Structure formats: structure tokens, C-alpha cells
Image (cartoon, rainbow, N blue to C red):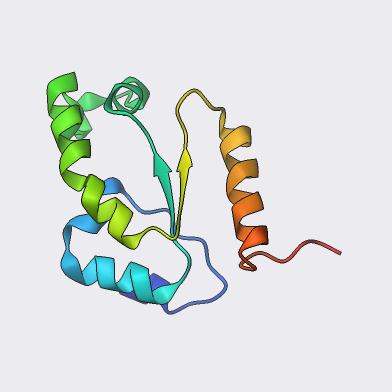
Length: 110
């Protein structure tokens, strides 16, 4: 994360566990504009295709605990939040793009 955060311009898509380390949260807060893509445990669980590689999503109860435990850390680093529940990838991308344009992070194309 530190290496990536020192390059510009850049879009970094982090795994959910990146916020667990205090050092990573500081890097996120100081290195750019952070958009937290909110998801319910139910939706996250449904999206995981291969639970063998995602032990925190092997069952719905564990997924709920994982997301609830990380929520304060996600909120700590987020400059903006986008609710992704029941939205398509293009819908989410448009919403993120509009936030970035409004905040002056993304310049409109000429």
C-alpha cells in the first residue's frame, strides 16, 4: 500500500482487510481520496464465489461479524461512502465518478 500510494495519479482498490493495520489506515487517510464501497454482509457473502479462499466468508454469521468489526475502520478512512447494495457495477462506477468530480479529484474529460 505504501509503495502504491506514492505514485500518481492512481486508483487503488484495496481488499477489506487493509484497514486492519493502523499504518495502512494512516496511509489511506494521508495519501488521497478514499471512497468506501458499503455492502451488507448478506450481499458480500453472496458475491464470494469461492469461499475456500475467503475464510471470513465461509458462513453468513462470520461475514456479519467481519464486516461489523471493520466498519469503524472503514468509516475512519473514508472521505466518501457509496452504498452498493442492489446496484450494478456500472451504477456504482457512475456514483463514484460523480463524487470524484464533485470533490475535484477527477477532472471532466475535454
